[in-house]
Length: 195
Image (cartoon, rainbow, N blue to C red):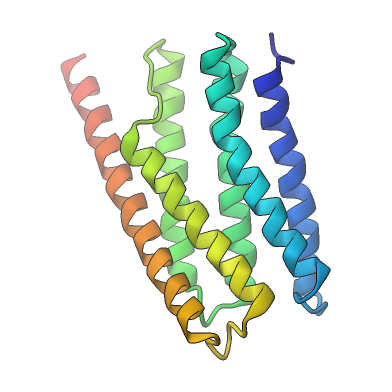
């Protein structure tokens, strides 16, 4: 069951993330993000984000939910989103403050640690709607950043409309991350206090 279709899709997302990081590394090394490098980065992220929804849906639809998938799916999510945010913050520090990235990553590590404790006890700690909304907001913000990297001038904040989309979506991703982290913490505390 480990090598079922949903888990293969999850692992393919990890390979997509590695390819994305190689290309972002080329941009960091001085290669222009315009042209095929920028568009490929954008495309790889969009496909990785889309397959995150597909593998979970297939696992539930086909009755192929496994312990491996429950561990790997959120792990790969964090690699894709967290890794891309780190690269983008390093590339464009004036547009993407490091403290926002650290806050988002801290939330991810915190919730992942809580989930690990509960899964070890046999208690389900599946993603809930606030966590899913957080993921959508993060993916939208990262997609906008990659698009800005490809067609705009992030350091010059041009084009203006795309700069404002990036700024607004980044703040919404931050707020949704903090809110969902707080809700998961409250849920964990109530379970621990009652047990």
